[in-house]
Image 1 (spheres, rainbow, N blue to C red):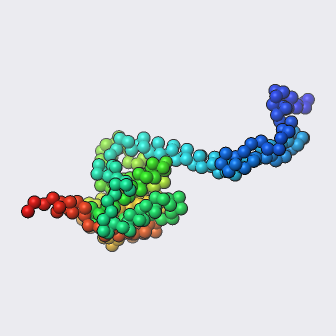
Image 2 (image 1 turned 135 degrees about the vertical axis):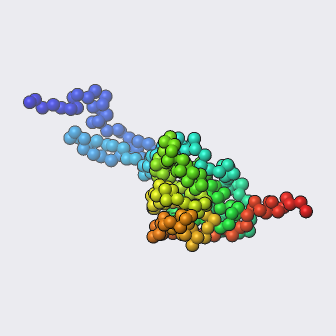
Image 3 (image 1 turned 180 degrees about the horizontal axis):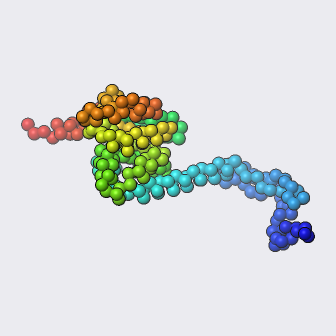
Length: 281
């Protein structure tokens, strides 16, 4: 067979661009660090050819843009799934750091919540905010989630009561894909699981929702809120309202302890304080 020169099959202008070298020393300037960009010489088809060297700034920028695009894509998928579901209480829809009312007992929780948001990329653990009702735990957790969501991170805020109701409804309503919800809760960069320990958990909810999410979130950042102290929360996981065993071995609480730091919010109930202020004597 006659030998074939691949270069001869290319248009002349492409042949020239492959085989000729530019007469100048620099080919451009990095728009980030302003560094002049040069060439490296490589052998191409038997001849030395100058090829552009790209700045580390550009390479790093391209990596960051790829991550951002991946986040946007994941966020859109999550939003598409949850737009038709109301899994955030109405009272927390607009909760943020700017409209959080700091009161005695909230100082540590507020400090840790804002620090968590600012240092999200380097955080190695989540938080379990616990304490009495109405102390601002859920507001701060929602503020973290909304702030990161605004920055482009795929996030989810799930109210435990609404989530467990949805899980029970999915048994008879096949339009509710509870497994897709669980997958999204596991995959997002940050999950807030709010008000765990509320009500009584059933065997179905434990096996279908609680354990899959908590187990799947290992190695990922999660924020939990609860009204129960660690001992009561462990008992809540351990058995249902009739005393039948759910998580006797403490697998859920063990995974939470291993991935989160417990923070006690000592604030009293704002709702009760407002009610007292409005009392007519």
